Length: 450
Image (cartoon, rainbow, N blue to C red; front, side, top):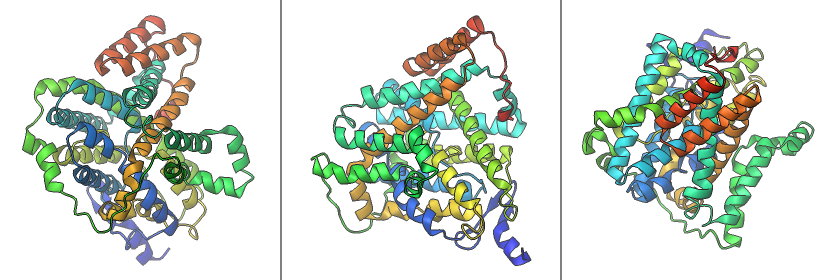
């Protein structure tokens, strides 16, 4: 590799982080860019119905908040030099929505709760990252308690879709939402299709597109069954960021008090446990492929990853607090990008090019285009339901694989139900009590968490 090319790929170091300039130190990759324009936009806008329905924001203001979240997520790649496809801490989302929407009545209080969660989480992540205690904490945590937390996220996700918000989303567009969920579940998890994917190029290509096939099919079928009515407008939207600031930022509406910060701490700890699992997953995917790309070495640094997540959560808390949109990994996208990267330089010159292209080089211009926004607007409820259903299914089978005997399986189930139904601190207390009483408080011995 020439010195010039090595310098181009290296970026600019600042502290433990690396800044890369789009199109110069991260080249454009068309396959990832085209997928990102649609998939990243649809997923990034999935919370718009929640923000308009429960947080007092208009459609334009909710889009502006999503724009801020997406810029911060993209900064993980381009500003902090993280070698993962970043995303939400999705399994924590249903728990957070149940806690915030169910526990606070006004949009102002809900935004203050989101601020408290983001600041608590940032404190935990930065503290455990700087001190190196994160690995020790995860090794100390008993397996049944881990499994119960993850199962709790699964139950809360299904509860949000099929009970709490069923009338707003699922029952409002039953055929389209069901079709999108079924197609995506089949492509992502069906064992017969996985076997067919190994021998069929079309199925393999379809499965590599993640959420896109099911989402597009729902978009086509929805108008035919009368569930979707498109009203596409032309022009450019100038997101009212200043209005989001006035309605959401603690610098405008006031800071959460100490009691609220303490109330949010258990749920922030639950989110950290999920985040740590995401980091382990992202590292394993990279390590399995790194041998095939010795020309593009990847720097895995857990301390840097913790700091990156912590700083982004602080920035989000100050501007457009909506926890947990600042995590470390979008697992499906990470796998898709890494798989193409490992095929060699002719497929992707460097990992950061593919990652930055999927996030449209850090500036999600699709949030500014009215035709795209208004076209996606009637599909946002479907995108949210789809995200939660896939999250629930994935968390469910991960959680069920953790217990090693019938007693541990019972503890996982009891803990999961308690976390999904009761406040997070009550659920954690139930889980800890059940673990100690029924299985003993045995630290995890799985070396993959180190």
